[in-house]
Length: 251
Image (cartoon, rainbow, N blue to C red; front, top):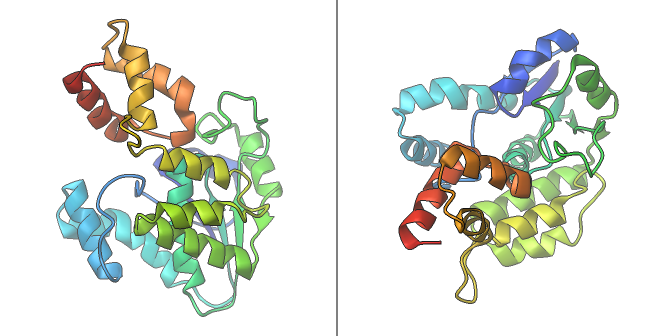
């Protein structure tokens, strides 16, 4: 059985045109933000449903049911993880890898990145959105087979992230593998989200710099932030609270 785990519905909409064989699983979480509490998966799902403001039955139908397809996969299954390089995607991928690493069945796991993009491309961090059918096929052709060590590394990254252990994340980032080529940059960006030495976190500092000349239109601010800090992969839900906070505190 072949599975394709896609980070979000936008890629799922364009994926069929590529005619790549396998069952699609859509990751509809945004684990870059919100409560990650829970000592087990049921507790974790409960925390996430509460954070997202969804009734648990709706959250299970929309989100959990997709992850359960991974957990129910038969021995010998192949998983292709379609995730981008930005923090939003990488955190979601670490979670998926933690699920896969905990499955005591034979399996093959590949990660599929936006291999057609150069580091200088404006869509480098999050390029599946504008991808053509040919580019989706190219990405699949260049997928990377993960080793058992890679799976464990992803599991360790998720554990450190879930527990808010920034020191452990920084240590882990020093031993990156070819399957996680930009993990060091991504982890540093995450660590810099948090205020230090009396300064705002990095996203708030960037927002303040954008808004210091009186520009407060959120759409314009969002676009400028995206141009500067696409490494975060923030959407409206992540940026709006920070935008309001900077407005309230003053730029």
